[in-house]
Image 1 (cartoon, rainbow, N blue to C red):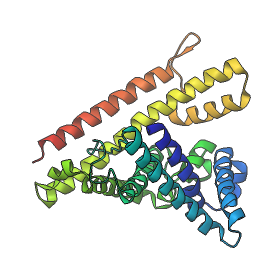
Image 2: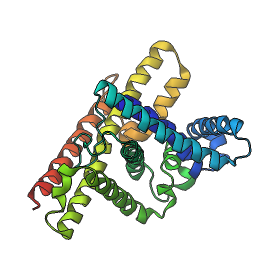
Image 3: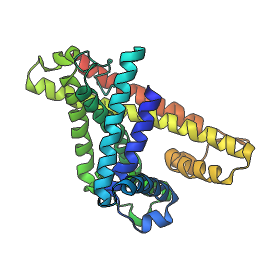
Image 4: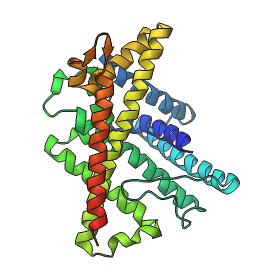
Length: 290
């Protein structure tokens, strides 16, 4: 179900991107922005073919709500018929779905919305790492695309972005706790302790984005190998561009032994060490709270 959950979130993202990004120069000159914009317009165009009187944004909103509702109905059917499980975790709240919402459409619609919110949080987390304040027109295509993907977060002043992302992570944790009776203990220590726990949970959500980054880099490395054997220049260019951004200085100053580039291996080891250390520290802080 995680695979289907991700596919639904990607479809929802095409419409979300349509809400915050207008047609313009970026989509014409940046292929990573243009392909998402065209896909979103295709979905909106399909809706408008049935309802031609609707404005574009209204059609996009209807398609967005339909996908949320369709996922809720589909997953409700899968759980009821095949006893499947839909695990939706974030930060501290990581258990399966509570029985209080496991058999209601309203509960699953809410969880469908929360799942997309977590998806957006991870995109915003990556933008904090790679979309540097003041970069402006010096951004490469991947950085420019990531800035567009993370809208509206990246439209805020740079100093406000970390706090906005933190607040959204706290809100996601609070929403999951509200429907998870096993997590009510978070509030037993009083308002101040609860606020600290929500903050730690949001920070753990940001740490989780580092693990997603590792998976993305691994996928791009595999894609670059495939491009060498298949001779696909398009795939090779795609993987090279995004790896240049993700690996950062390690891509510009590679660590080599002969012809062997060890930069991705060093990147994996360093990032895993950082992610593991941060997760251990934050989890320790949470466990020591009353």
